[in-house]
Length: 206
Image (tube, rainbow, N blue to C red; front, side):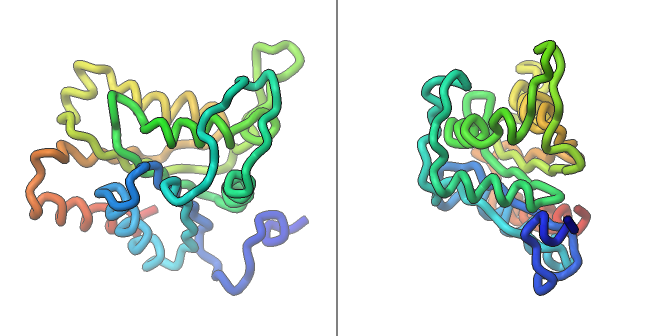
């Protein structure tokens, strides 16, 4: 099976890198959305194909009610999300840091979509696993009110380790860059404009 058939990509889309943006802010309008739009514009300027999932506009239950002990029917939006993740060569995940980590909506998205048999598969000994989303890469854009140095050296950057190692990395996705835009609460309009320009440049370099 060739890559175009396997991924669902069409020749009309072009020959650029297949990118899926996952915007994890529950807010429908936010700095995260603006940064993602700027990043997308930069990536498209280089001929890449960008699709997006805006979790604030999707319809799904973010609660994994019984863990993985019982199956939970995937809503149509999550089935489509899995198809898009399979299609993508590169992911871009954007979200705000709340209480040291990602919003509950984004965590619930990963709980519901990165399932055994889709994102990973334990081997018979139960000590090792197969990473089913390997050969994919990712960029992460994060906003927060905490100064980056304080988040890293005082808190230990728990959210960064979670997304890079225990979610994406566990599934075989290699995070290439994690970019922090902070502190947001005290940022001026000039600073926000610089961040948007920076995000667009980052997208053009993906």
